[in-house]
Length: 194
Image (cartoon, rainbow, N blue to C red; front, side, top):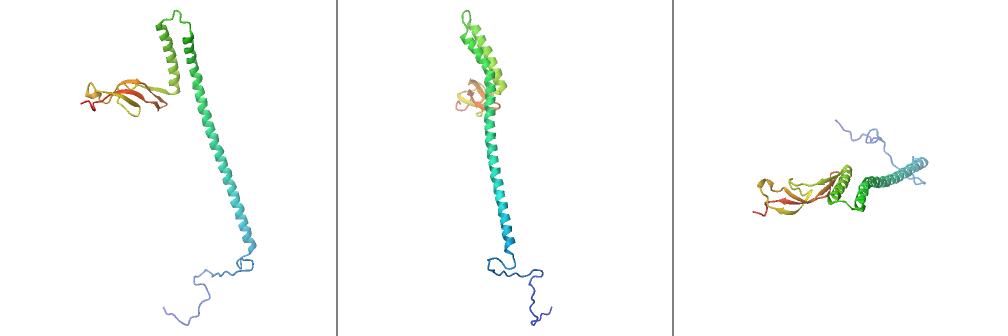
């Protein structure tokens, strides 16, 4: 390839297809060759769009806040209704207990009183179990600190009974699977009894 030093410089842009642009200032502060009016219109249109987007965002934020408050209120109302339903079911058992307590006890034997209380207890338990309450009485089961509270330890009569619950001092309760109160138990343990 032969280069000629005397070749005239091209008036064209060094990059083919791209024209050079040299901005010049005008008296209005704009660029020469660009009309000032259409640029101002475009800016105004963009400002209006921005304001509309801000309004939409504020409306959405307000709607979400109202939704959150409504859901919270409905959750509280639902819990209150559920408690009211359980209370209504327990009222009958309370009425039965009231009749047992206020009844004339002439001729009532201890066995009769015990039977009346047991009937009320069964009725009460039936309602509580239907609501989701479950009694935890783990005698003979392996000790589980997630559901049991060890109050005392006893040496095991045989190695197979090590870490089993030997007695329940106070039953525990679960409500719909969630522990409400751990069972207070006595545990067989050979640790420390060697």
